[in-house]
Length: 272
Ligand SMILES: NC(=O)c1ccc[n+]([C@@H]2O[C@H](COP(=O)([O-])OP(=O)(O)OC[C@H]3O[C@@H](n4cnc5c(N)ncnc54)[C@H](OP(=O)(O)O)[C@@H]3O)[C@@H](O)[C@H]2O)c1
Image: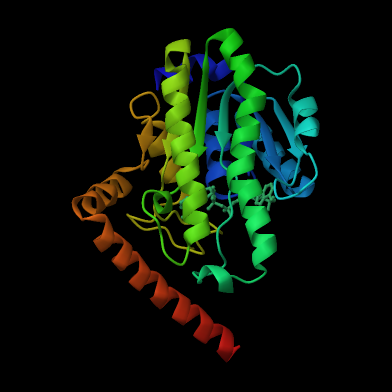
């Protein structure tokens, strides 16, 4: 928490900032006084979120349009957009998952999905960190929050590629934290279970499937205290319960659950 206090006069950069968890980080940190730079694909949505934040919290905002799934080099453009900003916090949030759980070879549009998922879930985290970390090191201050997933804590069958990309994010974050914590940089790996967003297709928040706003408020409370976190109390409890089981039991359970979700989804598609 202390780590976030000094940053109030500097910029927050959020990838995937127009919806869900990314938007909630942008709003909550703007509420605490940070200027925000928002990065997503749609200029229209970016402008709308930026103007809402500006009006509500009276902070400076900036938008950068970028599609992290593209093959072309978008990072030169992002670097130019961030030039001259004192960046205190980076939230590597952008991520995509499967449309429904599926066996790897049967994932629809597999080649394109592999490229996009690796570019968005892995490449973006490395490249954004590479852009922002040097400035943080110069100031000996900075916070990088990497949004992994509870699906990255165990191999998750039928979401295998997603789960593996999120395990990468977790390892990358924990390694970086060990490398740079003595230099004033905090890197946190955030591993949520379900949060009620467009990605999870959960409309109504519940105690263990919180709204992005509730989730992010709780997760921000762990910054500086935990370098790896499930983010909120119900998710921490679920993480603890799973940790009591041997990994093969967890993987069997995940396989069974995802098989059921897959069957339901395919049945619904057939009926359409
Ligand atoms: N929701 C969950 O239950 C859950 C659980 C565990 C982990 N997570 C992780 O949390 C992160 C955020 O998830 P979420 O549920 O908040 O997602 P979401 O509601 O689908 O929001 C995704 C955001 O990313 C942007 N985006 C999507 N594709 C993009 C691309 N190719 N280039 C640039 N921006 C892109 C979207 O805006 P545009 O479409 O306008 O570009 C939107 O702002 C992800 O990394 C996800 O893996 C989520």
